[in-house]
Image (cartoon, rainbow, N blue to C red; front, side, top):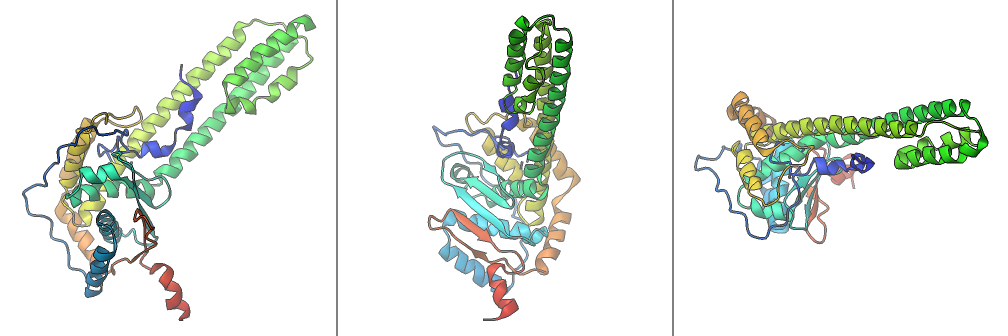
Length: 357
């Protein structure tokens, strides 16, 4: 029987990279590694030529390399580069390293990219693979997958609750009209109350149904409530299937964003495939029902790489990079696991530009 618990799943799971499989922000089933996963070596083809940065940028990057922990420095450079090359630098981005040895990344809050330590370790030394994963999570944010997923789930759950409540009221009224004596009222009310209890939070909406028929002499067939419960479960199953299909589509969209964002920023397009290869080797990294399979994601990625070759994307990214200045960083946490990448307006320092000191 499909339970209501499935409806409360956090969309953060939709962004988990168990799903990444790089589909893409969207996410994968968490897996603890008992043995190190073999590293996939970057391709022998020459790396994409990154456009030169202004001297001010070189100074900023030098300072970042000295001040930031190595993993955070890589993530800062990746997020900063992707944001500028794709016109995503109007708002700040937050970067977080989750200090547990799990193997996925996720976009749990607006403009937040969180990557688990285990995933960084598996992809260490391959900045293009990391960029593809980061890009897919940025894609989840840009496309509002997290917000839309929660809103859609809540809206459709509320609609279903209202429908079931109205159905229960109508059914109870019919039963009341057929009542023969008050002796049977308690039995039927208890059965109806049990149905509403199964609905959990949804049943609270229809709780007033009991008040509607309380005191009425009810006598009706007990299989009526069973039919209502069966109808409820069928509707829950249909809603679950619909939301799972939407989640799978969002993962494909996030995969596409990861490739486009990372490649336009000058990273190797093959980095997406290398990341998928690593993720495929992680024990227990099988996709959830609401995520596409790894083979399907790989096929979609290869098709996308053919349809949107790297050359044109790199040219577009270079043009945007030429017109922008490197983005500063601020707010490094004491443990070095959290950082804020400032927008093109300059972040908190912009107040001095406007008002002076």
